[in-house]
Image (cartoon, rainbow, N blue to C red):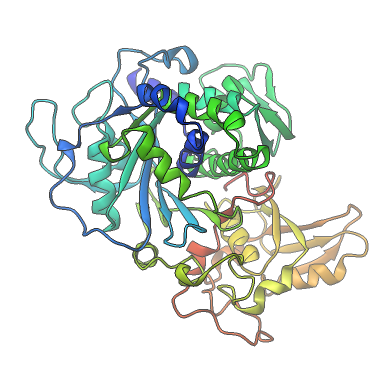
Length: 497
């Protein structure tokens, strides 16, 4: 029974960049400092390890933890036992580049197998290191209701080799209030969603809670959206992470479109800080404002979301090497996902005047939208194809299982007048069959031949017509090609598997 309760607990908030932007509300409202100060809680920094990576002057790393703790009225929104220990279901490491115009939020799946280093217990003693343990277990060390954010910070530093400059914890009651404060956030669903998709323990599918397509949500409805896992794609936590990233991007766009004014933003900051726990370095309105003001000029396109390079290991998630090391090295050097030195960027968008990870290949798919259907039962194949298409500039409108999962050969279907575009798509899938269809649009139905083919690298995926070489420090295609920008279509890449 307890295991089932843990599966139900979860708000996968994906709140990394959001929290940083939300506190912008305090800018210019000195009269409200005292109120915000009273809202903010700090955790004890005594639990932060003394064996840490060295500090860096190149960018800032902020760890954001989404917790499902049931204290403080959170049980009213998410169910569960309000006396239970705190757990983390979402963690993102936000790297803000030194130019303060670029940022990358790296999601760390909760089931990732990691080493949890020594962590401080409530009685003052320290634990022994724990090897091959799920990442979200770090927050539960000590089994206190408020959790152990210092232990999670220690674990992230051990995993990445990067020094975490600040840590923030937000609970889902505060998350719901924030969405109400902005008047709702636009989201998109790839299909109709029913009560059983939110609670798989139901014996019937129940009422419809979301309709397919774009819509605006807030409060409990927003909370339900970021919690949904079953019934979309392969029902994995990886797919939920992608939707959470889309949600955060949409929230950022909403905040910026409303205007960064005290009238608009103070209610948002008030809601955020009421459910925010931070390290002592951010433990006052002054400190939060100082940090937030440094983010004011970040461009939506230059705000990226990715997931830690991963693979399945049984029912758990393992880190993919050496891709993960390449990612951490890039962030440590303050280089963007396409290998550029962020210190040289001013107002231009990433890739606007410099080659993309696959050189001029990105131009091949410009303006062409593609739907990807997995005609096999190979885990992650649709995501792999989506990554390859995005590397060549295509817009992927959906990734979802096909109705028939026994496809042998990959097929590209195109609507009236779209043969030329389909042939460009075929460059990404050598040997695929290109055929016409009555319905408009371009679809790729993946077959076993694509699953068995070697995965292309960033360099081998470039068509022979490309005249530029990828940047020598660009990250592998499997990392950079999965990135979502904060200005991406809210309906794109919502399903994994």
